[in-house]
Image 1: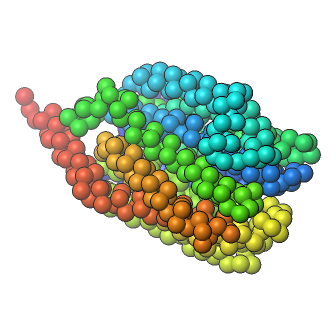
Image 2: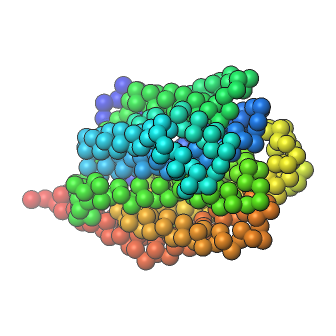
Length: 460
C-alpha cells in the first residue's frame, strides 16, 4: 500500500470490492503500534507521578489538568480525518492548513489564559470543584500544558496527510519517539519537587518530538477521482464538515473532566480521582489496538459489501482485546499490574482493582465507536457523529447523580461505570443510524462512481 522509494506515481485508494485480511493487517498493524505507543503515555506518566513525594495529590492534580487540556485541544484531533478525507476526495490541503493554524493558535491562547491568569482558579475551583493542594497542582500542570493545542494541530495535519498517502509507518515511528522522549523527561524529574508539573513537562516534550517527525515525513499525493455529487457537495464547506467532528472530540475529552467533577463530590475526592486516573491510564493502554479503527473504515470501506468484510476484521480484533482485558481483570493479575507498575498506596490499590472488571467492556464498546465514526466521516454524515457524542454526555450526566450515592465510596469503579454506560448508549445510536443512513449513502456513491466510470470509458 506504500509507494516504493523513488517511485513517481501517486498512490491510489485501495481497489476491489473485498479487502483481504492481509491487506487489512498490512494497513492497520502500524496503526496498532501507534495506538500502543500513544496510550503508553498515560500509564508511564502515572507511574512517574506515583513515585513523587505526594503521589495522590500529584496524580489528582495532573489528572484534572490533563482532562481540561484535552477538552481545549480536542477540536484539533479531527484535523487528521479532515485532512485525509480532503486529500482523498479533492486533493487540496491548503484550506485545511490555514484552518488548522488559526484554530491551533486560538486554542493555545485559551490554554495560556487558564495557566497564567485567574481564569484557571475559576475553572478548576468553581466549575470542576477541586480545592487546596489539588487546585495548586492542577494550575502548576497547566503552565506546562498550554502549548499542547498548537502541537496537536501540527501533528494531526501531517498525520492525515500520511494516512491519505497510505504511509502509516512514519506515524508509528513518530509516536515511538514521542514515548521515548516523554519517558526520559518524566523519570528524570521524579527526584525533583515537580509534582503534577512533571507530567505536563514530559507530555509536552514528547508531543513536540512527535509533531516535528510527522511534519518532516514525505507522503505520495493520492489520485483524486472525478467528483460526484456526494463528494463535491461538501468540498467548499470545510467548517460545516469539521464542526460536528470537533464537537465529538471535545465531548470525548470532556468526559473525564465531567467524571472528575463527579468524583470531586465523593467522600474522598483525592483518592477517587487518583485511582480513576490510574485505572483509565491502564485501561486505554490495553484498549489501544481498537483505538485506530476509524482509519480502516475511512480508507478501506467503499460500500456495504466492503463494510461487512472490514467490520468483521474489526470485530474479531475487538473480541481478542476484550478477552485480554477479561484475563487481566482476575484479582491476582490486576493487583500485580497495579503494584508492580505503579507502587500504589494500599488506599488506592483496592479501589483501582475493583474497577477492572468494568474496564473489560471498553474494547468492544470503544472499537465499535471508532469504526462507525470513520464510516460516517467517509459517508459525509459528520452531523451524526456530533449527535452521538451529545447523547453519550447526556446519558453520563443523567446516570451520575443516580450512581453517586450507591457507588460513591469507590470512585474509580463509579468513574469507569459512567464511561461504559455512555459508550453503550453511543454504540446503539451509531449502529441504528448506520443502517438507516450511512450505508445507503455509501452504496449510492459507489453506484454514481460506477456510472461516471462507464460514461468516461464509452466511445465518443
